[in-house]
Structure formats: structure tokens, C-alpha cells
Image (cartoon, rainbow, N blue to C red; front, side):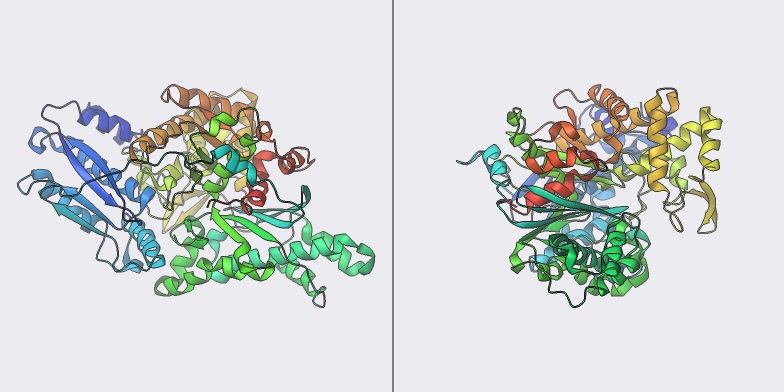
Length: 601
């Protein structure tokens, strides 16, 4: 079996974690090794890894076993973070000597944050979270002879208040003026409401991965927030404003207006005494704990990290204090409520379903993924809480193969290497926009060259140079073609004419199923269904293909698309009826309006 894994890996095919784990358990004398993770709240979670004796494996088998263990530890830390990891193995055990003792070095525990690469990046996130709770020391890994720790990871049951009723309370927005903002990798989506009425939407395109300074990331968010207040006040009585102000505001609210033009428009209103929001709800694509952005290792901040290097930790504080910067636009500082885009998706699905005839679906909690520029993941447990963990599922390693695609630069469209860590086989390159691009190029080049040539002719794929090596890239500078590229591929798939396009979305469904399997082992969520948000699920045939391959592996849970069918609240129904925007696009921005009113965060 492992010879087959090696053959597949060498020919560029995936070898999934679930396959390797199943193969390792087939050997005689398989032994369970205990991994005990101490979480931020000092509670404990235990994980078991099953390995045959080292001497029972040849070199190829040992390589896969080694990579499997490192990947599983990395996935656990990407999901939970924590204070420490204890690995129990007897002193004479060969896996302890040749594998477990190497983990502190592999994860670069003793290195400076700016010097950590690869697997060490997950320790940076964990250490920043420990800074946020004023922990006495950074994360560490220890190897123990025996397990002296009594592990109790039994989850609490529901309290007196049911989850459905908790969600329903969030829609009581009365007559408050609220801003909902969904910050993504290619755009920022905004909704403003007063009471039970959506006043207006705004979409702003950007590419934060190319930014060099933190201010480039923070300032547009603050400027757009101020623009929303200007637009609200002008809308109350346009007769009070001159033609230049009205024309400038109209241009600023258009989807293609740049930040410099928006700033120039705001200068026309310098003398205005602006209102403030009653509440702001916002999701940001990074680890967010108690309103503070604490991750700092995502693709959106890559350019800033590379540019600032040693100064990054100090400058990152500006981003981690975004909620404080936004509070000047609110009546009181405590009315800015932030979370990651994954939990926002889960919350949005929960609120809408709580107001439907299918409310029982969410009794065990809500688990959601956003499929856009990256894979976002959000979990609201059975008590309505957003667990205070990183949940960076897009960093999960699910593929231990695909060796040929690991030779490419991470920015090459054909690469399976993570943009941030350069680790191969992570979900970032399998289930999101990058996965669609990579798979389409692979299948088009193999069996439908006219489709590939069309990508080149349309300018979606161009030849470039990355670190001195030839590469395939999608242009993002003068014109960002990522959205048009994805739209083109999805429309080809919707025609049903090309088996290569079908295979792209079947593969994505398979990888989502592998994600489910890994999450069942690591998080063990009570809820089994998964809601999908984002651009990748807005076309019905694309979603149907994903669902088909997913169902072949996952028997307990379903994939559910977050489209107009979940529009049950007043604000979401107004989005559904909008002539320009769709629920698939703006659901999280609308959900953020209700999240600002959510009691359990």
C-alpha cells in the first residue's frame, strides 16, 4: 500500500491523511501514543496517534509515518493553539528517539518569531494569543515517560436557554443604526441598517497581500466606515448639500472607486458633524479573540510581514487594536464586535435557520466554511459560544503526496505550497479559489489544451518569473483578475460540457470531505452538517458536483449551501431581493449586523 502511496505522490497525485492513517493501523502490534494539549483556559484535550513498531517499516513507510505525525500535530495546533503539548512515549521507544524528540526543533519552539518558518508559523500565532492573555511563558512541547495527567475533555451540555432562542434574540435590533462589514482577501463588503431596514450596501475591491505597511490595511477600513456615516447623513436630506458633494459621494459609493478618490470625497465633508453608529459588527480574515486580531500569519499580511520583518510585531499592534480605532465611530467603545470570517458565517447561518421551520438543524451548533479567496472556518458550539481557539483550518495538511506540485513557488498557480508557510498539502490550495485555479490548469493542460489556451488568451494566466524561476501567475497589479478568472471557470462548469471542469469541483468536494474527517478527529464537534458560504458555491452545478464527491465519503453529515434559501430574517430577505447583490456574496455582511447584537461571543 505504501509503495502505491509513493508512486502516486511521485506522479503528482494526492495521498490523503485519512489513507495513511488507515494504512498505519493495519500493521501488527500497533501502539497508541498519547498527545495531551493544554488549552488557553488550562483545560486538556487528549489525542491518540497509532503507529506500528518502527522496525516493522521500511524507509518509504517510515517517511509517510513521520510526515503523518508531524502533519497531525500541526493540524491540532492550527485548530486549538494552546499553552503546551505533552507527548507520552517510553524512553526506549524508537519513535520517541527519532520522531517525537525532533518535534520541538521542527516547530522551532526556541526560535525568535521573525526567524520561524514553515511549521514554526503556527507557534507564532499561539504565542501571540498567549501574549494576549498575559501568559508567563510561550508555547512548549515536552516528551514524557508516562501520562500523569488526568484528561477530562467532556463538553458541557446545553443550559436553560436553547440555542435557537439565543440566535432569535439577536434579530431584535430595534431602531439602532448598525454597520456590518465583511473583510476579505479581494474585497470588503459593507451593509448599513437602521432598525429592520437595510439602508445601503458598499463593495470595495482591494488586494491586501500586496501591502507593505500596516496602515495600508487599517486605513481603508476606517475611511470606508467614515464614508458610510457621511452617506447616511446625506441621505437624510440631500437638499443641504451642493452638487460637488453629491456627485463626489455618488462616485465614492460606486464599486470601482479607489481609496484615494474616497478620501478626496470625504474632504468635501470636513465641516460636517457626523452621526455615530449604535453598533458595529465586523469579521476579519485572521484569528480574532475577544475583539482583538491576534494571528498575524495569514496571506493578507504576508507582504507586510516580509517588508517589516523585525518591526512586524510592534506594527502588528495597530491591527490588533482595530476595534479600538473603530470605536470612535460608535456611541460607546464597547459597541464594536469582531470575529473571524468563519465564525461570522456560522453565526449567519444560525440566525437565519433559527427563524425558519428547520430550526432543529442547529440544535447541536453550527459549523460553516467560507469558500472564497481562502477557506474560512467557523464553529458555534451547542451552547452558542465561539470557542476561543485559532481554528485555522485552511492551514490543515490533508495531502501527504503531490510531490511534483511542491517544486513550484507558492505563488505559482500550479503549486500546492501554502502562501504563508510554504508547507505543501494544506487546504489553502485545495478547497478555495487557489484550488480551483490549480486544478483547472492541471486538467486543462492534460486533456483539453483549447480550454487552457483560452485562459492565456483572456489574460487570466500569464507566464512570469518568481525567485528566478519561470511561473504561471494570475495578474493582480493593474487589474486584479482573480474574480473574473474564477467566474470564467465556474461558468464553464455550469454549461456541463467539459469533464475537466467537473473534475475540478469533484476534487474540491473530496477535499472538503477529508476536512470533515480531520475535524472529527481533532475537534469532535457535536454538529455534523457543514454550511458553505462564498463565491465557490453561488453556482448550483458547481455546488452539486462538490456535494456528490463529499457524500461518497461523509455519511453522517451534509453539505448545505448558504444561498437565498436561508434568507429568513427581515434584513436577509432584503438582500435576497436586491437587484445587484446576492445572498452568497453579502450574507456575512448582513449577518454582521445581527452579530453586533449577539449576546454570546
